[in-house]
Amino acid sequence: MTRSTSGTQMSFARAGEITEAMRFVAAREGLAPELIREEVARGRLVIPANVRHLAGALEPMAIGAVASVKINANIGNSAVSSSIPEELEKLHRAVHFGADTVMDLSTGKDIDATREAILAKSPVPVGTVPIYQAALEVEDPADLTPQALLDGIEHQAKQGVDYMTIHAGILLEHLPLVYGRITGIVSRGGSLLAAWMVAHREQNPLYTHYGEIMEIFRTYDVTISLGDSLRPGSIHDASDKAQFAELETLGGLTTRAWEHEVQVMVEGPGHIPMQQIEMNVRKQKEICHEAPFYTLGPLVTDIAPGYDHITSAIGAAMIGWYGADMLCYVTPKEHLGLPNANDVREGVIAYKIAAHAADVARGRAGATDRDDALSRARYAFDWNEQFRLSLDPERAREYHDESLPAEYFKSAEFCAMCGPKFCSMHHSRAVDEAIREMATGLGVAG
Image (tube, rainbow, N blue to C red; front, side):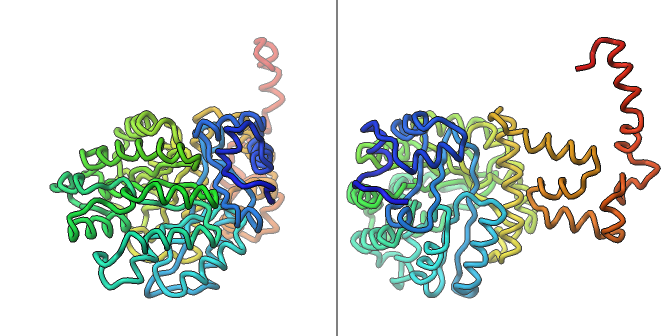
């Protein structure tokens, strides 16, 4: 997919032009192209599509209020683990099971080659956190220079990265507000910038050079994902002064990006108890002028290492219901280690469930069609159709078949849990006709 003239999706939308990417997104979402254009123009919808990636493997997608709730899968190597083939396998798993975007968070070797390989193969938008690579090129975070940060951002934009997390909202005056937290600053990028600001007693260079970053982003149509450096890393720290002080700054940075016609989404907290989730969404939407909200989880409890794909999927479903637009997955390895391909699968499926549940709760048109179709297949004991409609057909088939020989169960009107005598749907089907006659007699048959 290509464009004949330069500009961003927002600049075209504001000029009244419906781009090919907007039409593609409209068809995917089942929405009118003009609605897509209007939402991009006002900043409530983003189409992350770097001009370089758009000319290659990218299939455009949208994140925002009128679109379905999206999910992101984090991949990438570390200093002690992974290779390019392993990262491409993670990419394949993520896309196969339904990730709408991926972020390459590599902090190990061959970062440029890894990113280029991912961009060449990825049909979904690819995001990065450019300060990671910049930090690897110096001995100490204090040795980072503003120019090195700008050069790294431009380098990744030229490679084709569709959106970048930029931690421009953490300011020197915010740092004392972190005092008293249990988990301090849990954002890797935010902690690097905090160390730089403390060492130099100067303001965050990503904030002071924000205009230059916007010019880079406008040139390549990179969407900025405003990083929440002071997000809570434990439920104890949720909704504190540090978190909300940074959020106020992110609101101002949102409007500054729009002045450059750069698309914006705003990142949100990682650990929030359930009773605070709705308030967090409302506050973000108000302060950041309804820019799309991209959240990590949130985890609603801190006591389940090894199961944080579950603790966070609970929060993700809720925050999606209340209005978050993209959910960043959490795998079982969160807080413990680098996810492998199977961990990616577990995280993606958990978040596909959360995002779909949010779409259902938000009353999105057609959201329950698949649920209804699968329920009809279940009632008809059409096992193959149930598997086909499942988010993870392989896992559904595996669990169904593991108790008894698969061929026996393909035609059985019961499963291994209930058996033939206690299958409620088997008995219900047997009395369907009688129930229909009774309902007709009472005038309630539809």
